[in-house]
Length: 84
Image (cartoon, rainbow, N blue to C red):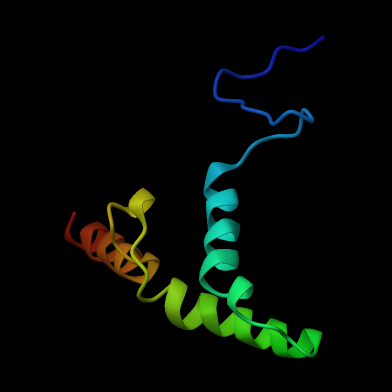
């Protein structure tokens, strides 16, 4: 049997654990999906797309990014790389 790397974490079912992804989907459900009833999948897809592209990636601060939005974090990284 192969040993798993030290940073490997799994859930009770033995599947790999991704805390960042699980946090994202929990946030998506709590901030958007649990507050609405969608009549069609198309409505749900559009609303989720707008939440991610307009709010989540541009404005919402993330603790894993030192409390910056993904857009601000990426812009800062690009600027830092140009200055080095």
